[in-house]
Image (cartoon, rainbow, N blue to C red):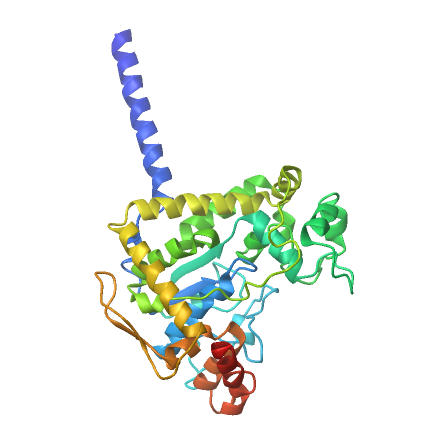
Length: 387
C-alpha cells in the first residue's frame, strides 16, 4: 500500500511539474502564429526613448502613408501623444479625423503604454510592437542626448566620464533631474519600463517589476531588440505579412559624439545595471523570446542574409542618389522584383518629425497646408540625398 501511495505521489508530482511548465511556456511566445487572428491594419508601436525607435518608426510612418492608413497624430507641431504625462483621455492631444472618428489604424508616436486606455483608440485588437535596447548602451545614448551632467561650453569631457560621476551617487544626481509633474520622472531610472507604463514609485519593488515585465512580454506580439535590428525586422515582416520593401531602413540619428565608442569599465557597468534592474530584466527576457521566435521560423537565416544584402544596396543607392537611374533589385524567394527610385528614397530617408508633419497635412489638409510640411522638408531632404 505504501509503495502504491508513493507511486501515486510521484505521478501527481510529475503531472504538476508538467502542468506548471506548460503554464509558464504559455506566457512566453515561441512563434508568430499567435497573432494570426489580429488584423494587420491595426498597430500599436510603443516608441521607447534612445533605443533606435526613430529608425523603426520610419517603417510604420512609411507604410501608413503609402497605404492610406489613419494615424493617431499630435494636434500641434510635435511628435508626442501626451508623453511624458499619463493622460486620462488621449484624444485630448490627438488630431481628430475629418469624419470625427476616434478610431485609428496606427498609434506609433511617443505615448506611454496603458492597458486600460490605448485599446479604445482602435476598432479592433491591434498588433502590439515595441523596441528595447541593452540598458548600458541606452543610458550612454541618453547621457549624450539629454546632456546629463554636461557643462555648457565643455567640448572635451566624454559621456563616459559624466556617467562615472553620475553613478558614483545616482540617487543624488538623479534627484536634480527629477521631473515631479511627469509620469516619466527620470531620464536614467528604468526609462524603457517607464515608457511601457511602470510608475516611478514602483522602481524599487522587484516583485512589481517582475510582474510588469511579465505583463509586457505577454501583451506584445513582438518586442524588437536594438542590437538585433535586422533579425527583429524580418520577424516584423512575417508578423505583419509585409513585403521586403516595407522593412528596408537606414539608421536615424546615429551620430558621433565624445565617448560613443569608449570602453565602459566593469565597475561602471555593474553600477548602471544595479540602477536599471527593471530595464535589464526586460531586455534579457525580450532577447530570449526573440531567439525563440527565430528558432521556430523556417528558412529564417536565408531570408535574413537576403535582407541584409538588399538593405545595404538600397542604403548606398539612396545616399548617393542618381535621378537618371533606378535601382532594380531582382526577384528572390524572399521578395518580388523591387524598383527603387527618388520617390522611395524620400520616404526612406525622411525623419520622424517631418514625416509626422506630412501625415498631418495628408489627414487634415484643412488644418495643415502644404507649406507647413515643405517648410522643413523636401529641399533639405534632397540636399541630404545628394550630399
